[in-house]
Amino acid sequence: MDEKKQDLFDRLAVVGKAFASAKRLELVDLLSQGERTVEALAREAGLGVSTASAHLQVLKLSSLVRTRKDGPRVHYRLAGDDVLDLYASLRTVAQEHSADVDRALSAYLGDDVQGDVDEVDRDELLRRLAADEVVLLDVRPAEEFRAGHIEGARSVPFDQVEAVLADLGPDREVVAYCRGAWCVMASDAVRLLRASGRAARRLEGGMLEWRQAGLPVEVGV
Image (cartoon, rainbow, N blue to C red; front, side, top):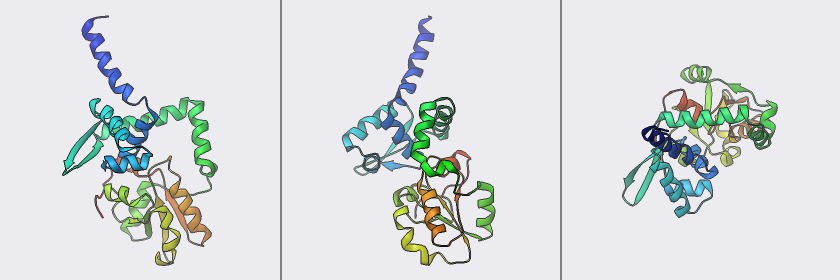
């Protein structure tokens, strides 16, 4: 093979190899929600800070993530929306063509696969938010909410949903969302809400798909 062509494919392989780790993929999944510190990523992924930093350095050397310094803290973010698209495409292709991935996903999602939770699509949600017809709950951890959320959403981490039931008001339907189509927190929140007598649905997909669709994201509280 021509040396220049070989060099091209060698460099392309570096990017591919960056995805060849379950923990690095989990870190990319977390970064699909928005910018995070090393410490936050390590905590959420169940890693030591030094191990998380090593994985993040691989992603950085492959130009898949970028950093910014804020005093002693280092914040990581995906290098661009195309990285988010690449990760989402990897999930789609793997689910479609790998029976092992499909089985593992079905085992993880459990009842979600049975379709017992109704969904609202993004267009309907936007219309109903504009008309003030729904209460939108972001049931991800508060730190992910601050990193980026749907405008008009209320941050109610999943473990706090039951505690705020009385504050939601009885007149409007509740829509819950979490990280994405592979996240179970929104479905579990909807089941809890429905068991308490509330009309509730989950957003189709979640924050990953919202970002991928190019819809507006609000940062901060």
